[in-house]
Length: 197
Image 1 (cartoon, rainbow, N blue to C red):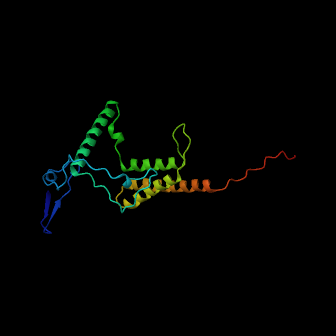
Image 2: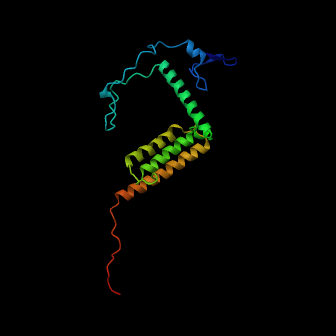
Image 3: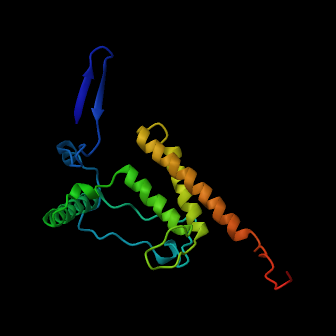
């Protein structure tokens, strides 16, 4: 493990992270693998009664949760994912575009949630399609953005913080407006009689 000795304080800092900042497995981590079942052992799927039901209901947390993938399974999956990504990037580059255009950033992630909420509120739609309103889904998406704002407080750049706060403000306002429009009784229009002049 990478160690740094601080002379003035008398303590040693040991980096025990298994991966480098580039996502590669550290040599030290390869040498010291925790005891785990062999990679060839197939993972057992969770019994059907522990999976979410067809209506999306999640079972109570007191039930047994399936074990996470082994380190070998995670490493193999990560390597396959990186290779697939390189293959896709090569195809994108051959088409004349830059693969960097499609890199995921925090702002793009926030923008995707913003667009999802706008679609759920029926304020945006796919070209040629009718607007579809999903108020529960919209509320959950807005709550997800709110949760992100809470959990990332102090860790965002000013641009990311600004984008997140503006998105939340606009979506909350839109949610209130759509909710009011849906719950307001229809108003009677002006009378269209042929009364006299």
